Length: 76
Ligand code: HEM
View 1: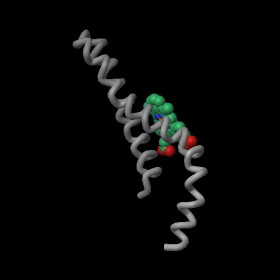
View 2 (view 1 turned 90 degrees about the vertical axis):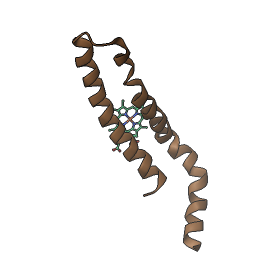
View 3 (view 1 turned 30 degrees about the vertical axis):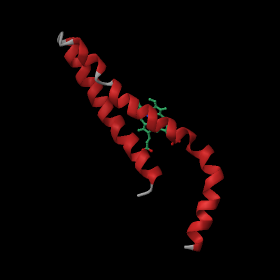
């Protein structure tokens, strides 16, 4: 699995976990649970933001390197 595929699958699975965490947070806060629970989605959201921004810019910074890497792989 290359780095791109890994990042995409990481984003996909963290997004699923994020939704579950948000739902748990809603229920906990509705039951008047501790207020710090409201911060728990921020950690997976930060991971999603980092991996998402990476995926967004990937096509642009990939352009300059992709042909060289493809050529190197052909030689090997
Ligand atoms: C926080 C900032 C986020 C950024 C910057 C971001 C950005 C991106 C980008 C650029 C893609 C790739 C789109 C493409 O195919 O070109 C993507 C895919 C995706 N994003 Fe996000 N995203 C963010 C948050 C989220 C959240 C909160 C969720 C859902 C809870 C989510 C779920 C997904 C899913 C399911 C995909 C498709 C992944 C796949 O290929 O299987 N993302 N996102």
